[in-house]
Amino acid sequence: MARSHSEKHFSKRSGWLRAAVLGANDGIVSTASLVMGVAASGATQGNVLIAGVAGLVAGAMSMAAGEYVSVSSQADTEKADLHRERLEIEAHPEFERRELAEIYVERGLDAPLADQVAEQLMRDDPLAAHARDELGLSEVHTARPLQAALASAAAFAVGAALPLLTTLLAPSAFIMISIAGCSLVFLALLGSLAARAGGR
Image (cartoon, rainbow, N blue to C red; front, side, top):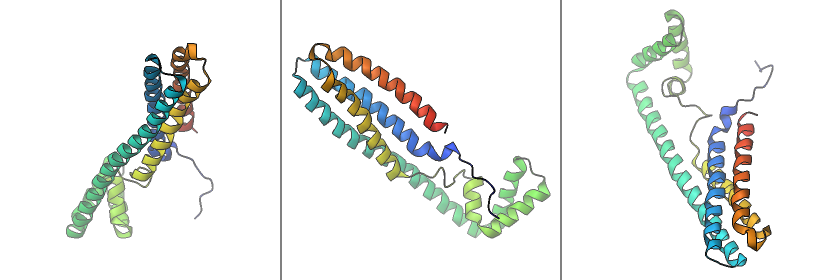
């Protein structure tokens, strides 16, 4: 039977949104700090921009690599748990069925109904049932290394571009205070946009 309406749940965005917010935040802070440090040395505006662009490229690559490795480790752990659970289901199906029923009893179902639900789910797709209800794994929360890496790198680049744009447009005499002030504004706007994205 088709659903009568479609619901949008915000948890589906948690993987890429977290990586994007962290990437943009790091892009703003690290690039602003870099260009302010270079500007403080008395470098020309052109040299400050070159340093900032180099920081953007290096930072984006670093964020992507770090996020990919981190989320890949999570994905490997999930795969190992699923493999072990599959072996346990094959070796001790009745024990695993009782274990599933106990989980449903703890969540509020009566014992007879919990047994019935566990039996039905074990018949249809036992691994999916145990992954979801015992391990807490689902399609929404499954680790996606490539998605997280791309989101982090792109967000870092966008965040880093904002202090660079300020450096390009600001008068040379006020470049330090312009970068500092605009970066604080950018960070505040980022927080506001992230809150809205997570709630829509």
